[in-house]
Length: 504
Image (tube, rainbow, N blue to C red):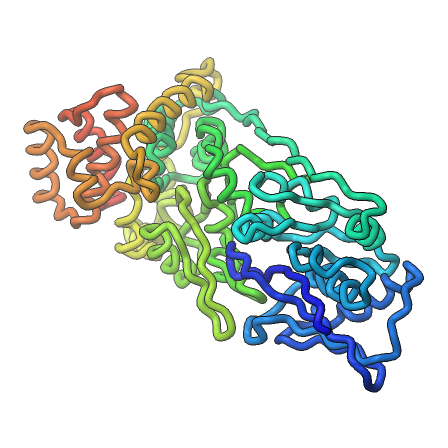
């Protein structure tokens, strides 16, 4: 007789069903696990044996074989402990076989039989719902899995609780979703003295999810401005929160099962490797661009990142997803993020500061910014120079709108876009529009079109740049509450694209 239980193996954010087969047959006593397990899965036999011993359950003096099917799919992680134990208990007729087969289980076992929380409970719950099965997981992981709502989630504290639940002695209650976390930003745009043009660029970028690069001398406020971006972004929608939380669940970043409605803000150091930024490493884990999905990826000291790392951003920026291809894994992750980059104008940082003489100008700045390739620079919708703030300006009272006021305008603009793209699942913000959709929503009036065509001819704009200017102009019109794109909207979009030192 072969007993069966089910669990999942993670491939990106997708959780593939794995059938755990257990056969107890005559022969020399042995406990083997087959089906392409990694080291953590192979060690499960010792944890399961110790957990059963703690429950005073002795294994028979027979040959125990665990097969993880499909056998050609790599199995990684300690979450296979619980399904192996459930299949074995079913084979020993301690729990009903039909209950084990109708359950997807995942969880790590301690030597005393208690269950340790594992990553990936949320994607596993999605798979359980699609297959109309119940999800069994550690109690500490059940709150995040319960957010799916389409399937029953049972959280157990120990293997003994699992046995008592399946045998009917003490049924466990269904898990409840964790708290919704919305962390308000304590950093206000009004804290930034001056820099009104940069603040305007942040507002446009937030409203349409446009990529932004800021170039300025050290201490001019680039990082300070970027740190206030989360305060003007609207909360995640229900769909976006679930997408983002699935990635965070795989990385163990969900706090006590709570779903975070605050948009991610990731700021990796410029020494980060390609695997850290794009994804990869053991098991092809998600990188910073995927952890920033539906949020912001802030890359300070942008030219200091390795050239190979910067170039790998080009395709994910366009497609909104990344394929991590390795010899033993091909995994796809979503990465619809807003890229905000900050850079000095040159290596020393003071090329544009007239009060400090640079002996290598202008070659110093050209060499430094040329680390950012033309195709990558072409993908930035907004480009601004951030001038230094004078000492006298620092004593001035706060100026400009507060983050709350700007956030209200951004939310209204995004509401217009949500209505505009209703029924188009792959389109959410103006930056996503292309082809015929872009022609329909972003055709300027006669005066605006004339200005745009003249600028395109004078500055030799690429087709990509032309379309990105149209998207930015559409966002500016949305912020203005205008259904039509007029000449001022196009002119402002062009002003953020073309600069004396930051060319298109």
